[in-house]
Amino acid sequence: MQPTISYWLGLFSVIFLMVGIGVYAARKVADSNDFSLAGRSSGTMMVMGTIIGTIVGASSTVGTAQLAFKTGVSSWWFCLGSSIALIIMGFFYSKPLHESGKSTVSQFLTAAYDRRTGMFTGVFSVVGIFFSAASTFLVLIPMLSNCFGITAVYSAITAFCLTICYVFFGGVKATGLVGIFKALLLYSVLLVVLAKSLFLTGGGVDLWNEYSYFPWFDMFARGFWVDIASGASTVVGVMTTQTYIQAMCSAKNAQKARDGIFLSGILTALSGVPAILVGMYMRSHHPEISPIDALPLFITTYLPDWFAGVSIGMLIIASLGTSAGLALGMATIISSDLFGAFFPGLYNNNKLLVTRAAVFLISMLLVVFTYMNMGALVLDWTVLSMCIRGAGVFVPFVMAIYAPGRFASRYATLAVAGGSLAALTWQIFLPAVFSPLYPGMLVSCLFMFFGYKKTVRSENI
Image 1 (tube, helix red, strand yellow):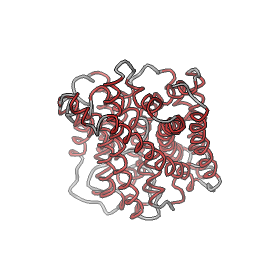
Image 2 (cartoon, rainbow, N blue to C red):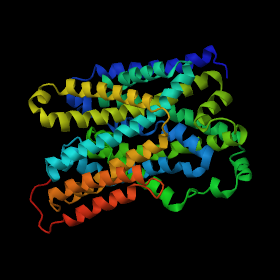
Image 3 (spheres, helix red, strand yellow):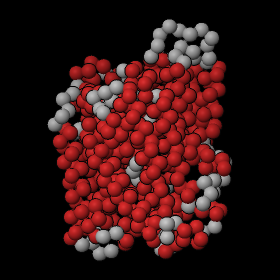
Image 4 (cartoon, rainbow, N blue to C red):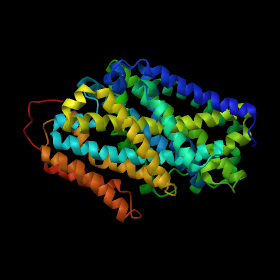
């Protein structure tokens, strides 16, 4: 499609509105507590907005359509795994986490075990989240290049500037406010895409008649253990991701946190359905295209110009929101758990400045790192990120919440470090054998088993 004036008006109106909301949120930030936790005053919609603004991004939309183009409905595992994780968090995490008064995963583990455990958790959480954010930039930078006809260098600079506008000034409050707007607009776009794809495919009947059940409609098309590992990696990765825990901790009370995360779980699962239909339709009618372009090309080819502009703008924001939200999570860990531990005096006197500086530096590093590795595969980085985050941290984190004092601190530290390193090592040397999640969690569980104590200490989180 040759871009028209109405297309550009639709696209820029969405982007400018997003920037305006971010700047507005900045005016409400008075201190680091406002920036990182929105003053612990978020309602259900703000919690939902923060989570949806981060979790429904490139992987849930463009990435799901890309994989559906290749394998069919098994591409739903990322959205489904994320949804399962959020619902589990709502049932079992929201109350104890919110009532603890903590704001990071590292703080929970430090309180339950010791400072070393928290430090290792912070380091490996940042490493894991970094790869996830970088994988989103792998989609965002080419999308900006194709949309505006600019080089990859200018696209990377644009991505950096938009990230700063999204989260730098307003923090969680900006992420939440933009997330609410994003959720409303994104799901309006996805609803239109769903309706159009159902119309073009005769309610999906044409796809059913054209494609064989295997592999196109089999949820385990790549093999039972492969697809189960994809879902499980997403579950443990999401359940140990700082940004989603931070969103719950920002709520007014545990009920608001629970309602917000339940709503996020439902919406996340639904987000993959239109993308799957589009991916399969585009493979049938436009097999010559690159799979990564399936959803953007469907939008620009089959939707009205002005709505196509709004939709592409929305996809840019969806990708940007994920990277920005993850950058905020990393900045919070680095500033409060790492910088604050080594320089407590400087941190306590300049919390907001330190956190914003961390957001700025992380965003810059993300863009530079991604630009230098543009040939990398998005899925490889996403899986590695989930495994590093979840394999070592998941079991010690759950035990920190529900069984504080039951495990020796040194073994909890070994579980975090050993599980994460085992997953990373397996991914490097034996990626084709099976998912690195399995050896990573096995090592972590073994250390926790050996560190089990019959006597419960009196302190609680």
